[in-house]
Amino acid sequence: MSGKTGSLQPKEAELRAAFWEQVGSFPEGFKIKRCLQCGTCTGTCPVSYAMDLTPRQVIALFRAGRTEEILKSRTVWLCASCYSCTVRCPSDIRVTDTMYALKRIAMAKGIYPGRFPVHTLSRSFVNNVYRYGRNYELGLGVRYFARTGIRRLFSNATLGWSMIRRGRMGLIPRKLKRVNDVQAIIKKANEFGEG
Amino acid sequence: MLQYAYYPGCSLEHTASPYDKSIRAVFKALDIGLREIDDWNCCGATMYMSVKKIVGYAISARNLALAQSMDMQVCAPCSSCYTILRKTNRHIAWDPRERAKINEALSAAGLTYDTLVKVRHPLDILVNDLGVGVIKSKVTRSLRGLRVAPYYGCQIVRPHGYFDDVDEPVSMDKLMSTIGAEVVPYPCKVRCCGGMLMTTKEDVALDLNMKLLQAAADTEADVIATACPLCQMNLEAYQDKINQTYGRKFKVPVVYFSHLLGAALGISSEDMGLDKLLIEPVKLCGLMKGAAV
Image (tube, rainbow over all chains, first blue to last red; front, side, top):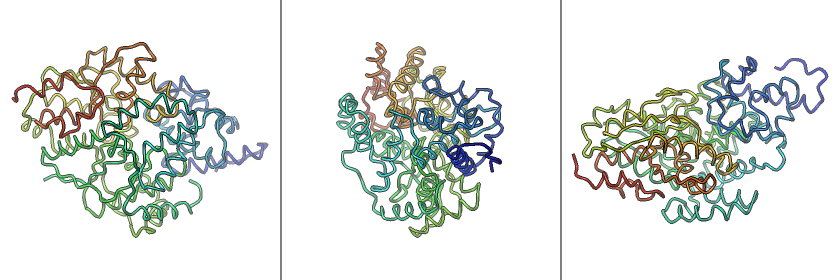
């Protein structure tokens, strides 16, 4: 899809192939090729100020054959999925979907930014859904803080307690009646390889 | 009578239970039927999309397949669920091979999904299916004098703006003026609250929410009206932390738009979970004690 890989290092060639496969797996993904490097995505992104690579730079680095740097940056894990870039892009590029695609590549290849373990939250979420069929908010939060910074567990304890008191935080996960059905669907869908 | 298959989503079971209660109460008062999809599961949210897309779509499609057998459109109040369910439909319509894969996965649970079921947000249903005229005729208590900042957040109008403008949505504004509330010119209508960043990168999310609260304070709003569980949670539950971090004294109540609608329809505070909020909407509660129209 991407054409020649020429003098690329094998790892970069592998990441590029994964990238093209991923952007081909959602509607209008290939419009990424139309990027003008205008920076509208970065300008409209509410969190670009906190990113180590801006969304525009992500596309530029991919073109420069430096995909691993993208995956080692915090950028894709900072994307809050607000879709501002997607609605503003003059080339109609699905920027948010591309960020998701990069997250999936990071997950599949195990390449993450240092000291920024956000991907573990996605992993715990997915495990939760498999076990219960629904998201168990309290368990997810506690587990994430316990893994990534126990101090935050305590700094958010008051807040958690006020939510529990008002019945807005379930203490026990609720399981679906037919959780087996959900698990069967997940197992089957997992057979379809990446994507 | 209007009837919808109701998909509350995980947040509405717990953190956003006031949203769930108020939507059910308001729809009942307006004679709109809501039948909860039996044994619905998580939509996958933004998280599944980061791990394995096809699995995310397959579990999301289970809910749509269940709704298909009810022969009704889906009503999804959570912005994130709304977007994911819509995206699932779009994905299935886009590529027949993806549709086949999803159906193969669904068949493991004895389900098929072939007729795309339309997914609707309650704002869309209220304004475009029922219409503000009907709502107006059922108002028993005017909210005159209540200054409301309408906060739509991201995922109702973006990425596709199915029922409202992506930059300048007006459906909630219309509802609010219908019930006599005063809609303030809130400049952050569709600015992001950070969503899950409050868990993963708190300093950034606190900053985003501080700006949303500041803009509401600047317009002298009495309440912020939201339509999303994550927006409501971030703005309300983290307000103390924002005050501590930035040396502010915000005490802005953050309600769901359905609370204001419910108040105008004469529904009690308990019946719509208004008493479960962390910051009491003092002015609204005052109006609710007042005489009916």
